[in-house]
Length: 154
Image 1: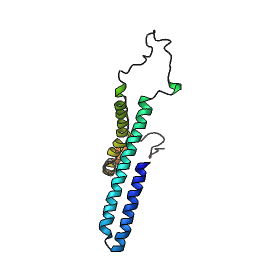
Image 2: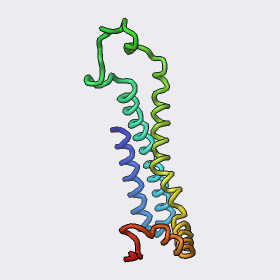
Image 3: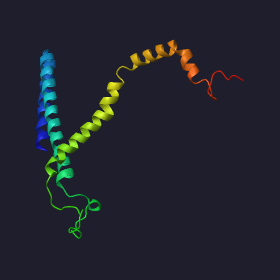
Image 4: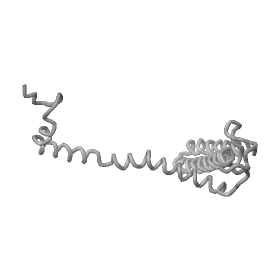
């Protein structure tokens, strides 16, 4: 695409400038400038890519038709109670926000909570081991019967 050609041309130009600067002995400022420009170009490309992906997902999930196995095109039983209502855009505009909320909730539940609960693991383990050492006799007598008892009593 044209944007990719422009990015490649800018990178070639900065590479040529860097080669010239190395020959002249003033490479550090030129290298820093090239790094800034490269990072800026990469950031712009990432934003464009994320926007394109978001647009494609939005169209695929919320604007296009459902796959043929998941849709029922007829209104044969529309006169019956409980039949699905067709062409009802009542809450359809909220679908992206609801989906985003569900995905954010899943991220919090499956990623943030375990990280938060595991953040003080070493301290909790140390406290538990101190408690177990202090109350060892009480904990061992709690389960003093049965096949897993350390004192068989036979």
